[in-house]
Image (cartoon, rainbow, N blue to C red; front, side, top):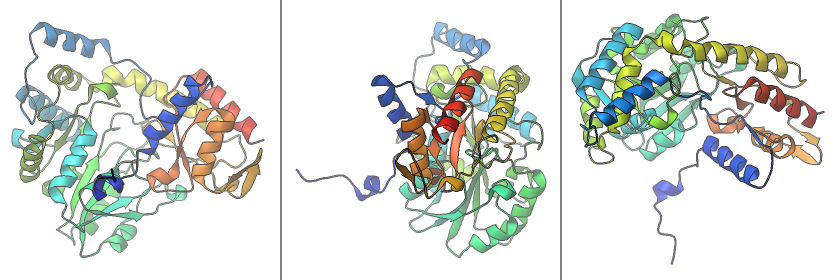
Length: 396
């Protein structure tokens, strides 16, 4: 039988982070001692007070279908969180709870974009942005940034990227994969450009909000009164609360976009998991200080991994201000041969590290920047030290 798959799915690129993780699992199954620094997942357990809320929900008999856009009690908790942490005021009709922030992003793309609409993506960007845009028949427009500017897009670059077809701007702050954070002043500079282009809707992905090392305070585009009605703020509990598998994300958005996402979600997944939602109520209503111990540990690991990588000739690193990744420039290795393997690009380099050093990283090509690789330090200090030691030996 001939291939009956759609052009749509055939155009999608598999997630590079999940693909590398799968290759690492295959090698482990074959007996290889692989250190995985490829996935964006905290290596902590979900805090006990959140687990206990989930257990209580089970005892209380929560087992039925949930409202498509989330329990009212959870949406009330999200309203409290947005006001407390971001100085943002939302009402119930502006919120939608989804099965992870990834679904929230997918929903927004599907309900806003028409065929041929352009979406500006400052590079590097999270690995799934481009394909989520393509699945909505949109056109990703990549805007290169540089390590010298901490991988942040300038107002001049934004202005140059805008065309009559531009419909959206998507960015994350703190950024996955670079850890860069846009200051309030930098966001204001971008907002000033956007004032001249009122058709553009902004997606502000703030999933790493609480993993911030204290240099640049977190800021939200929707804080600006002239951007509030055209900004979708995306967040969730996966990263800061070590709840990746609980699959809860949410948006605060203009009501017409939230209604459309609710409509779409009702025909796809319906409401998110009932037990996870009850647990997230507790996660959001408790002080973020209760998970600060994870941030403190990540900060110490950042110091360790930067010190180790900076000791390797050829790695060029900036200092990420948030998230738990480093995104070093590795172009010094392009065109060189190690142990019979020619390194032509970042993908070759990441694959070489996997095969020669038994360390899983992710090529920067997947994030729109072919000069770098992403290394996660959501791993133990022992694993970080051993991984960088192996990398250094493989490049000697």
